[in-house]
Length: 158
Image 1: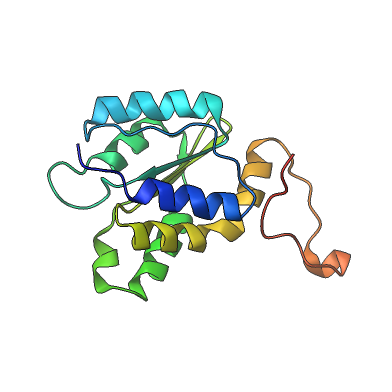
Image 2: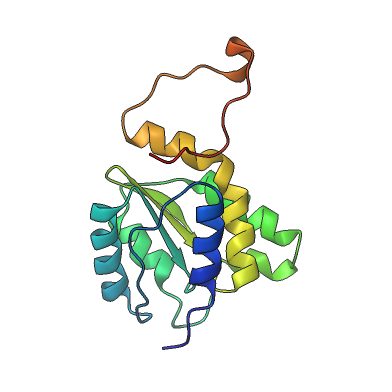
């Protein structure tokens, strides 16, 4: 296994945006191992993030494993991440990363490069709090125009 350089960068970005990291592991690029790790992480956290394994190399099987454990896919989030990555490199379109729901958890596949992972995460961050609220059953919300205030773009700790 290669050294994980994206994970620490993603953790730092998440914590800077008010998220707590409760579980972190490095696993081999094997679909059944990834599926098991995703399921375990989903019991411990509402937001499950993977880095790496989203490309087109033979060993890149994270999207396949993610698809197997997710109830529903959120194509728009993955499209948003790729569009943001495209601003930095034309290679971003080769990412096959997915976003989906797994019970009341949200799963987000990020690219393996630290810059790509952080860029993709930053693109998705504004929608994550609302998505997590919806998954936890908080479906009533006031729009910014109705309340006259700006909705928060990041969760509060607590």
